[in-house]
Image (cartoon, rainbow, N blue to C red; front, side, top):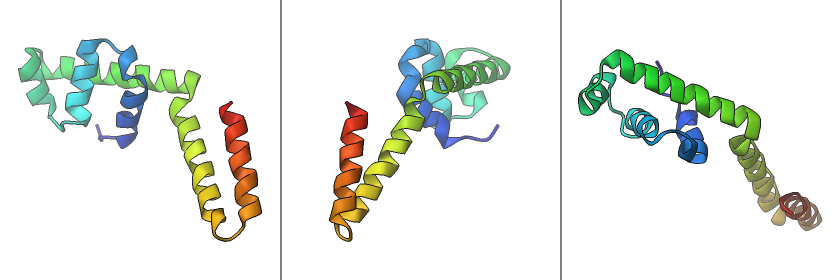
Length: 107
């Protein structure tokens, strides 16, 4: 299992929707970089149970994102903001238009 940084972002957005136990396990794995063996020992479970909890949490997080698109919309907004900021020095009118679009979308 490769450690995907996107899972950390999904945890930030949707972690409160996971059970506290599952959230702690997935945070230990991704944020604290603990191995399955370390997690299993800390929680008094098998490595297989730790892996299953991580996989189930990942699945839940991906399902939340597919339905709610919080991370996707955040990324889109960040790209729009970056574009507007880059235009400030070169094309003020474009920057104003882009900033107006951002504000309108946020309303």
